[in-house]
Amino acid sequence: MAEITMEMIKKLRERTAAGFMDCKKALQEAGGDMEKAVDLLRQKGLAIAAKRAGKATTEGVIACYIHANNKLGAMVEVNCETDFVARTEEFQKFAHDIAMHIVAANPICVTREDVPEEVLAKEKEIYAAQARESGKPEHIIEKIVEGKLEKFYKEAVLMEQPFVKNPDLTIQDLLNELMSKTGERIQIRRFVRYQVGEEL
Image (cartoon, rainbow, N blue to C red; front, side, top):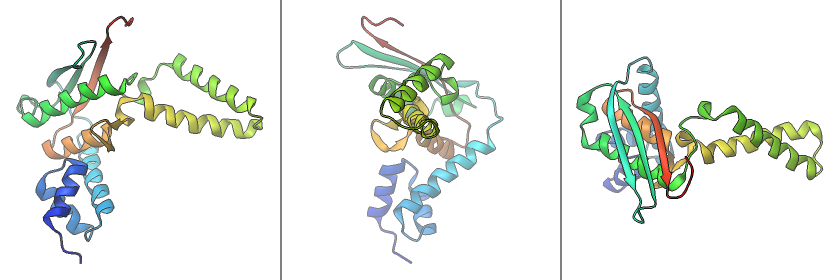
């Protein structure tokens, strides 16, 4: 079995934001394989998320981020189960990072289920028209539209976007990690992004 060095643990912590002992355990379990260890930590977060899916998230914070030019800003509501977790530095930093990410990445909604029907219909129409124009046969067009929709979700949906401060992780990965650390269900409930001169 490969020796687990401090350097490896540090690298894994940078990639996943998981705790020291969690990173050490994941690396030991993965036999020193970094990618495997990342997957193990993500699965752990997902398992906790699934286990706590029915829990009410009635506590939390509203975080704001205003960009340095004072022309862009965002407010986000992040919920958790207890006031104790809501007051922790880690939870508040997460909420602030999400507000900052929203300013930078400009998502249109929190989850793919929240994408308005008319927006989806319009995107599908555009992709189908582009495929037809390039002479693709009808039976292929549907597959092309599906592929482009997946790409659209990754660009437009907050939970699926790569985190601006660490593109190796999506916002969903970050959320899973925080749930894994706190042992609570955490939910990004809603957000609003402001840009000077732009209609809401």
